[in-house]
Picture 1 (cartoon, rainbow, N blue to C red):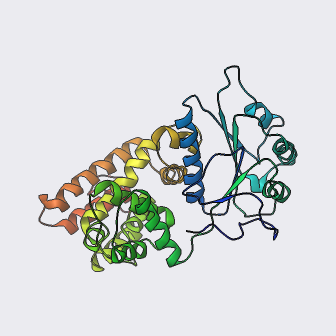
Picture 2 (picture 1 turned 120 degrees about the vertical axis):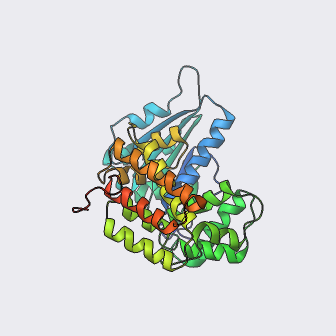
Amino acid sequence: MAAARRSSGSSKKPSAIPQLEWRDPRPAPIVLVSGPEEICAERATGAIRTQLKADDPSLEVTDLRADDYAAGTLLAVTSPSLFGEPRLVRVAGVEKCSDAFLQEALAYIEAPQDGATVVLRHTGSSVRGKKLLEAIRSGTGGGVEVACPAIKYDRDREQFAAGEFRHARRRIAPAALHALTQAFSGDLAELAAACQQLIQDTTGDIDEKIVDRYYGGRVETTAFEVADAAIAGDYGRALLTLRHALDSGADPVPLVAAFGMKLRTMARVGGRRGSSRQIAQELKMTDWQVDRAKRDLQSGWSASSLGLAIQAVARADAEVKGASRDPVFALERMVTVVATRAPFGADRATA
């Protein structure tokens, strides 16, 4: 996907610095990651970290918030250490930056520290920090810009999904690509997760039959909608969306797989301390996956209920793959256990 002709939050003046694709970023003293699409921004920032780490494993990584900033921090974390390790400083929330950060960032880009890479994340949701963005785009600091424009339309979504497979050096048939993007038309994060699942779980070229086997070939109701309703504790909506999915021809196997993927992520994230970015690094996940798992865990989950739900999903997985003559009942039982956080058959009067 071509870089945005004019990034969110930019002025009408043409940029004097290189404009890079979010799939193909490169380190620079200053890297401006602009635009609203968070998944693309996380991928770009992660790729820069990977490149720097490959060049020198002693890389020091620091995360800052521009809207919760202590004066003097930027210079402190970019200054060379005793052993001269390279430094990567990732700054979030530049669109909400404090006066202290704005003043110090403007001074910093005039004379960036040797060996330091500063990644500035600006979503474009406000004009805050405009003076800093204009200075970077004028060429001050020897920076580059990575544009992450919004992905709203079907064509953009298909280009995004196609890029996922191309980046993984996998081929997907046009009809399969279209079916996949239509099945996940409501959430780019879920589309990205679906692409990665197909890449990891299959071999060879991906055709429409493979997409249909995993995601049921349906559009209106997705496996993730059923899982989201159940995990949120909305028993009635979970059953309704399940029946809609089945009536639309959804395959039980990917329905169970969606539950399993979300619950396993919740189990891995639950109980861990630290920021979403720190947890994501530890678990080799993306920030948005950790944030989503944290939100899911807040809807009444405990360690015991999560374990019960995972057991129910494991049982349903075996049953829909041939261990039971009634896969629909197996799905309904799984949804019931997950949505009520209780063993099947327990009193659900309040569910």
